[in-house]
Image (cartoon, rainbow, N blue to C red; front, side, top):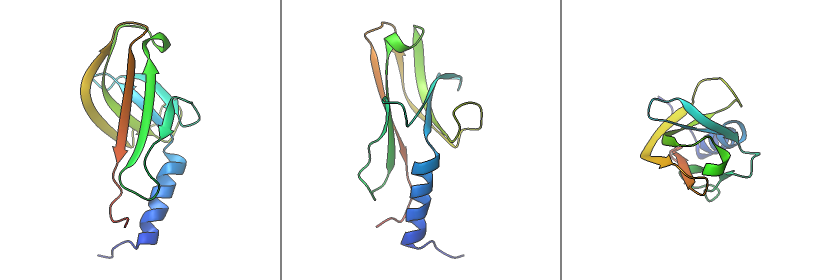
Length: 115
């Protein structure tokens, strides 16, 4: 089996950053609560360039959703609606109950062998 070169891994990382631009927050059953794209000010790539893991951050406020809501997972997509999650990550269950409540989730994506 052949190993990717560092350039190959950089191209994979670039592809992910360019195309996997939607993050969805879900409840415990995987039901979508909100999906936002990288063009939304509440979503940001926050990793240092050329380091692992890639990190996509989403911040939401209780005033932006119908309350109460319990969040348990984040999922990454390459489409604004529908589609299949490319990766799903569980996190500590958090419930927003008031409009002033805020939630920040960082979804990490490990792309190995970038040195």
